[in-house]
Length: 80
Image 1: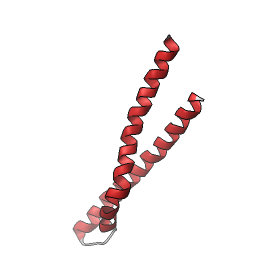
Image 2: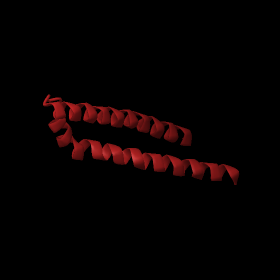
Image 3: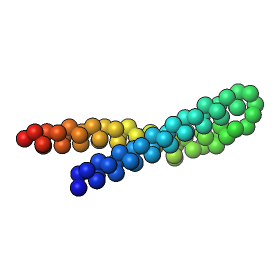
Image 4: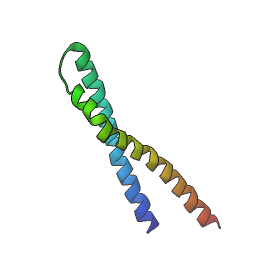
C-alpha cells in the first residue's frame, strides 16, 4: 500500500516537474520574443501565471517536502 502511494506521488511529481520545466522554457522563449517585438505568447503566459503555474510550483515544492517526510517516517518505522 505504501509503495503504491509513494510511486503514485513520485509519478505525479515527475509529470509536474516536466510541466514546470516546459512552462519555464515557454517563459524564456516568450520573453525573448517580446524583447524583439515578436508575439510568442508572453501575454498568454502572464495571464496563466496565477491560475496555472503558481499552483504547479506549489505542488512541486509541497510534494518534494512530503516525499522527504514520508521517506524519513517509513525509514524510522522500519528501524523500530
